[in-house]
Length: 503
Image (cartoon, rainbow, N blue to C red; front, side):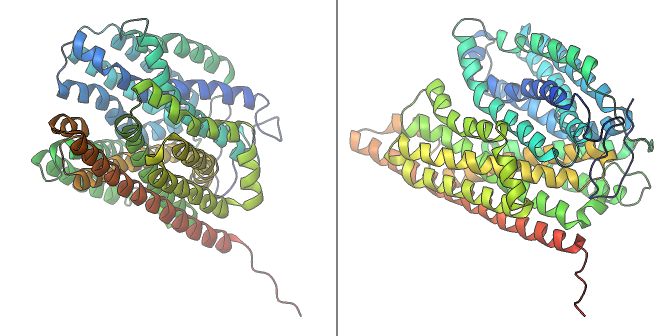
């Protein structure tokens, strides 16, 4: 067993015994954990294409469909911090195995479900496994690679995230063309089984050797608070931001998260050490991560509507046309070009340049997409190029500013921020669109239109709302780049030794 010793906040991860350059099978291990990560990410998007089949075969109501989709993300996001803490304390390999097993069992139950209640319960179980996998995979990367190779390894890990996002709807569509809806979950089983064998065989066990006492109350408070917050964000667009459902869950989240912060600041073994937030490097990466996922999550949500409602593409066609974004991220990170750019520019400039490219891409989509797909394609390529540079740089900034012994908690923070920012982006930018469009939905408005001219006015109004929302998302991303780069630059200056005066 490889025990990782604790170190100061910005110290590099220690090398594994017997090797001055990390674990000897580190690249093979990276492939294994990326396989586990891909399984989780595919399930985040694959269910969307099965909604018509689920509605027909399970007689699912709209609320049932919402819970089928949200049960997974709600449980996963609520448990990320707790899962990361458990991985640090009880062993990252052990939690990775547990995550694969839970995810596989949940997938089997989902694939064989005979009612909406069974499917919702199975999806929640898959969310528990997903939380363990998301946090543990990134934590293992930080343990088996030395500091010099971590940016490239994190870049590949981030590229797999984009690959999962892009291929989920495509795989779902292809499967549903030939099989019943349950197969979209059953295809997880061979992948999970292969990942399980590979993890048991290849991945070394690492844990926090200090053996801190488990922070059970902190785990409970963080889970309840985060889940309540994500639930409020998810519920806002459909139930109204002033509804009792949203106000109660948001109020509960505020109270419980305040108690969580109070508790963590006063115990000697906190699950999340609040001293991390005094590190400008950490806070800069955190601020940037929230704003970039806010802009990206909301913008991608709007892009699918632009492709289908305005440009007239079907779901599978829309998925194919958003694929260049993810493929750009995959190409730049798998070839190592993004890591080379980061090494040349440095972390702060990489974040700023990457997020400026993303903001430029969103602006291009907002202003050019109405003229056809070529304008949107240019924007997607810019977004992909910017994401391939900025996302690994911010993830590395977060993970490298936390002691290696707390790598699981760092991964939990990174994952929680992504879930929070993305959900908030969908909610806020969607609300901006609804306010500008002033209609229930585009299909309903088009059905009520009596003439071709009126339908054209409806589409123009919808396009105008999309443009404003995308530009707000672009502004949020650019602001995130400036804030993150400024704080990261200050952090680097503070840790640099002063230059002695020349006599």
